[in-house]
Image 1 (cartoon, one colour):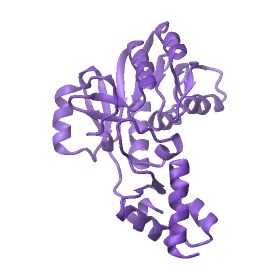
Image 2 (image 1 turned 180 degrees about the horizontal axis):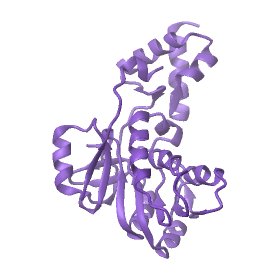
Image 3 (image 1 turned 60 degrees about the vertical axis):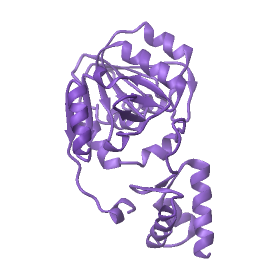
Image 4 (image 1 turned 45 degrees about the vertical axis):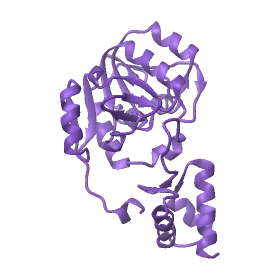
Length: 267
């Protein structure tokens, strides 16, 4: 298969699913991982795809663009894991917490094994699956109802009504973007309403957002920057953004992330 043909196949798969992994493309195309990396480099240079750790995703665009869960799950993996580990370390035994939908909160759920006697309320199918797979007898997982979004969130009136009847100690919120005027945002109007209900149900709000979320604005605001008691991001956040956020949020926490080269991100 010629390079142009391979790249057409890759591009079509990204358009269909939102993301591709190098390992999957190696198997599908019957070529080496180096060949796949070169093809992704070509597509990225022309602005057709965005390279991420382990593969590539569709290019971010309008304020209403909402990538699927698989597309988002391969972006900024080291940053998300570091942020998620710090967030999980804040969770205290015997508390009731909320986890919003999103790949960072989903990653956080995987770090909660050592927290006993925990009640978790979530509108994320993926988060609920992770927590229930552990088979813990000292854990209660409450999954709201609602309509499913491309990011596997349950949203809408059913979810909102369920959340309004609850009182949580802390909510851990994943967001699509954060900016000075817009605050913490999402590209999905229904998800915004549900996330606001989740925030309102808690005594304390902790936002999880890697550095690439800075300057990104979704169509709807979930909460203002000053509503976050804690914002956990990563050391990749620029100095100007750090200053703005430090003046707005209650506490700004920067998670350490090991440096990776562009070639390693496609390994």
